[in-house]
Amino acid sequence: MRITQVGSRNLPTLYLALFGGLQLVFLWAFRSRFGVGIPILGTILLLGLLVLMLRVKGRWTWKLLVLALLVGVITFGPSIAAMVQRQHSGLSFECDCMAMDEVAIDRLIHGQAIYAVDWSHTQAAGYARVWGGLDIQYYDHFPLMGLSAVPVRVMADTVHVPFDYRMVLIVFSLIAMAAIAWLPVPLPARFAVMVAMLLNPALSLGAWTGHDDICYLAMFFVALTLLARKHLLMACLAFGIAGALKPFALLALPLVLTIIWLRRAQPPSTRLRAIAIATAAFALPMLLTVGPFLLGDAAAFYRDAVVYPTSLLPIGGYGFGALLVALHIVPSEGMFPFSPFELAALIPAYWFALGALGRRRTLGQFVASYCLALFAFLFFARYFADNYLAALIALVLCVPLLSAALYDPAKEVPARPVPEGRHGGATDSGAWRVAS
Image 1 (tube, helix red, strand yellow):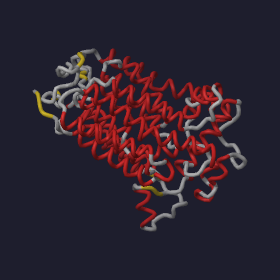
Image 2: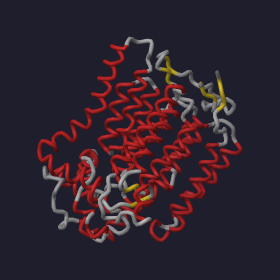
Image 3: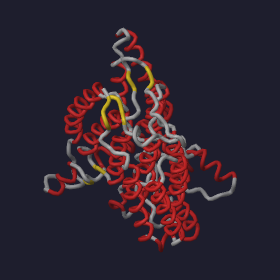
Image 4: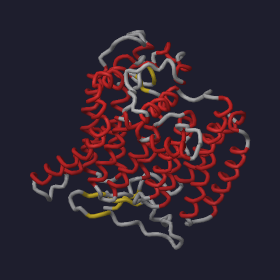
């Protein structure tokens, strides 16, 4: 049966006006830091694109190209301006995680340890004011976050350009753009997804200061695109890379295994073998990147990447932990068993998510199911950070846009493409029709 998507054909214009406008507001507010050239050019491009959206039907390929230019100006532009400014003023408004990432990358290039090391004589020492210096005593990122930046650092050194971690964030943002452009959904939906992910000030502000969430989100979208295009094994590998960058992506594994199990036309033995292969592909990036550090010094990795974020990080943020601190049930530096609460929340979250995934086999439902599991995990985590919330909201915004990507494990056939208009874009009348 065919149904009409809850979102309307006006959703791309609404997203563009809302998020593009908000991002420009921030740029004008921070014009003393980024200059007036970026917000002026961004305002002209945004207004021009809005006029194009409202006055011209179709032409979605051109609209996407203008959007890519707009992203380059008001999302990448401030990061580039901050990189240039840094050469004169040094680190100023950048986050502490960026300062530590850059040092960790340098240590990796020189074959030095990155866990259980002394950061007091590096540029990270300037952030000792954060939580009384606790934050710079531990490197809580998985190693792939630093390893993935090594090629960019080597290239920057080759061309004699001062390395800045935001270069890596721009590279991953370009990967995200390419993955979104390859999504098998109508062009209006791809347009709106690109706005939600790359023109969203909740994510852009973090990228300007060096937060690395776009790295795992980019690989997550690569995996989504491969999944929707029926490249299941490659999708599992991409999900595994996303999980090796940031472990939040590991929550997608039960959803992928459910998709495989729903292939009821295949015998159970075939499905179980496919599940084993998919799990191995999912785990491979983690084994290849974390494995050497476990062999080298497992205690150091466990101390920094596991014990610190789960037991030593101050309790707070926007979830259950913040409520406990606000009610004076536990101090922010205290100990509290969050893991049982996370497990208790994840079990019903997966119950509902996997059931919905079996009924509605669309990419939108897959992302919705993942968001439900991610929220259950993050809300009861020790610290529900604002950048985690920003990433979660951005993914939720994509849910109504991705239901045109249909996978049916029972039939094993790709979704039929939505009819395109005369100019290569999806027709407005068919842009939001999905199977259910």
